[in-house]
Image (cartoon, rainbow, N blue to C red; front, top):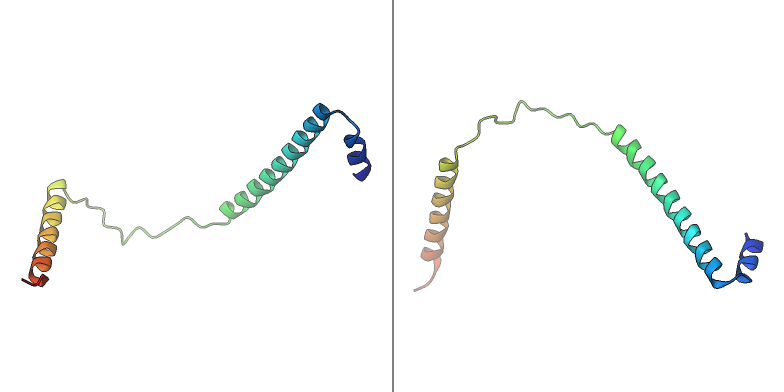
Length: 86
């Protein structure tokens, strides 16, 4: 490796830039491959199952949601106005 670097120093700048680009590309590809392998191993060994029995399957209507929001906002405003000194 040291001999390769010594020979590379003697070459023109265009060839040195090309060599630096290729070396960095190979290192990046090697890191990406290792990262993909490790990630795929983690995904394969992950248990994605969960119990859906406790999940409420009914969706509230938009009107109910808005009314609940108005009630909560009103209670917050009431508590703020009652706690504000006059």
